[in-house]
Length: 283
Image (cartoon, rainbow, N blue to C red):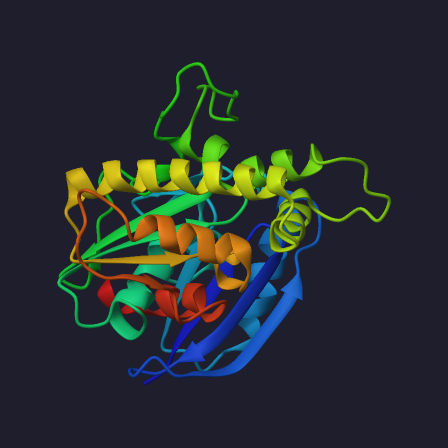
């Protein structure tokens, strides 16, 4: 029996059929059109491409409660009941929780009783998987990037100041990289910071070390509360080899409250699709 997993991200929708061993087949990927209605149509088109799927899981970048996408800043969608919109049962799960579920079952956390996944992208996301199931709470579990580490820090889109992602997420790395000086090629700030650190520029090396320390500080706080057996680091900025990945992994291995393994995620872009399919089989 195959299950359809759909990963609805901020800019693309990716889907594929997933078997019981986590193997992917017939993978498709397309750019999302602008506008909420067009994005829902894109999901309908993906669903129509896989009529043979026995069940459907949907990972989405946003907060989910009782199968409803309650809010997604990146997608411009809120209060969307996908089962009603698509006309069939759909298991809806937050994208970070889907990735955590996949990594805990088939990836870097396989075999661990409790897995904490933290994703480093534009922001910081997270998921706690215990006994093969992601912790959901009231719906927004995993919004780890909004831990407040410095109340006098930079403003965050959530309305608070000094959130963890504002100190250690991609938004922080981009801000620091942009401050290194003019760049005529439009290179993202995080990439500029990584290149400058790789070249040994003292200012960039020091800045990256500072962000890595802030990342470890927030992660240590999570581990003090959650006490995971294994920590998995994922997301685009950790997936790519280079100074950012090395600095963040090294810092994460010096924690006070976690002495177990800290591993990079293994499943890459497949994690959301596989995790969505797993969520469909959990429901």
